[in-house]
Length: 255
Image 1 (cartoon, rainbow, N blue to C red):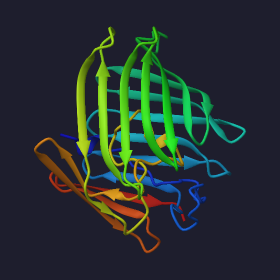
Image 2 (image 1 turned 90 degrees about the vertical axis):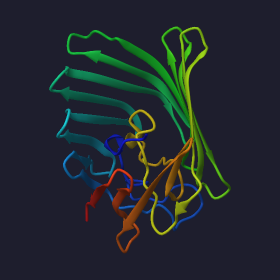
Image 3 (image 1 turned 60 degrees about the vertical axis):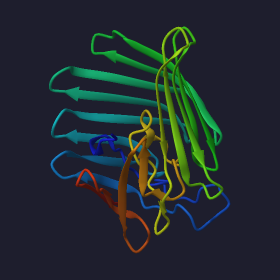
Image 4 (image 1 turned 45 degrees about the horizontal axis):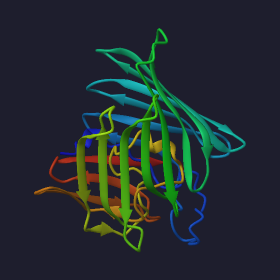
């Protein structure tokens, strides 16, 4: 089951500009300021004078607090550093360095290390995008073998219809495989960028989303999970509800 706790939500096109999909009426979101899940914690977003996201802070009442710092080179995302403060495991650091970042894809290195500098996990990654939609995410071990593959399939309207995920063993065989389908969408307001925590640090991609319209269901085998959304007069999502979990996330924006 997809847990509500795993959600990381931020609005499409956090810099408030029109995306390059040719439709000047879509995805004019305000700058996201804060998301809150009652009883679980909150996430805060901070921007520079160019409205580029530069800092994300999270306080989780159950497990940890963390901070994510974003750096840019000529306006293009170049590096991300994340510190996760856990009351049980100390500090974990994540460093993401982009070798290239374009409108059709991104690639680079993903490294996890502790405060002593030990790096138990070093990977390279490749993302592909199309019309501001996430299409695939692949992660590779240091020896070049594939560790994780995620494929996102959309209909002709840009709605997410299927999400497939595979984890690979070092020898190349599939370790675990999951597939989710989606059949209903809410077109009443702007799309949220991250509907669920489906990929590493999805909320660092300001202009990329999973789906053009918000998904109202997630079908996992014989189970169906349903969701609902509330919007302000300008179409920004103000509440994001997980019906079966009985929880709601609120979203606040900068003026």
